[in-house]
Amino acid sequence: MTVKRIAIVAAILVAAAVCLGRMGPAAAAQMFQTDTIKTKAGDLRITFIRHASLIFTFRGKVIHVDPWTKWADYAKLPKADLILITHHHRDHLDLKAIQAIRTPRTVILASALAAAKIKGAMALKNGQKTQVLGLVIEAVPAYNLVGMRRPGVPWHPKGEGNGYVITFGDKRVYVAGDTENTPEMKALRNIAVAFLPMNLPYTMTPKMVADAARAFRPKILYPYHFGKTDTSQLLVLMKGVKGVEVRIRKMGW
Image (cartoon, rainbow, N blue to C red; front, side):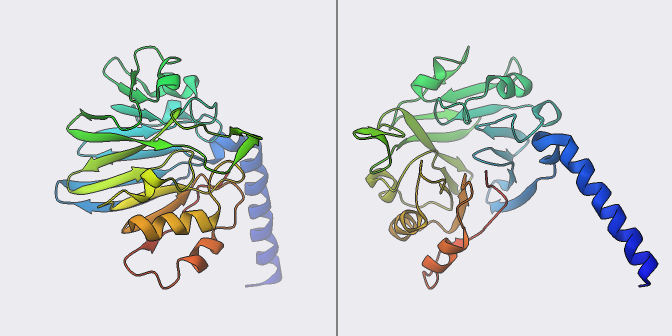
């Protein structure tokens, strides 16, 4: 490549970067990574937004988890058949995002405190189970063990937040919400895919994630909602652990 052509390419890349920056985080984040998980009932497609926001597509149904308009233009994303809200904090409960993707037929499941803020939402308490759209959904407790807002006050008190185990065909998928490596998490079994948070100081350290993963052994582990935490630490901690595949996707901030 000639010097002149290199300069032209460099100029184009700079212009593209400037344009992307002007778009803002929500518009820039419309380029999402995806994965596909095979189940006996069909493919499960996972779309990774950012932070704690995910989309599952399965057998023609669209399931949004903790949609947040900071990182996506939800008016341009598929409408929801089901919305799962883990808890009431603003980066997980965004009424604007919910309004953009809900329809008269959309089912919304949420923790009790979150459901109280969303018209028409159904509350699920820790340990409860329900069936929606042919999917079995279980609410798993999500809370801090050691992470404190101030002495004696956890970032996420027990009983306020949910993680969810969703059964897609023969695959159980666990989205942990904001939590640490609780006994309830470590007691889970037969989890095909797990999303575990690693956003410090609010959720788990890489060591906590590794500890939990070694206990309940998900076949595929995605660290998610990991902020600026160095995900390579988890890869080191999980090295040599058989039967658990760690997949890193763009889910920071």
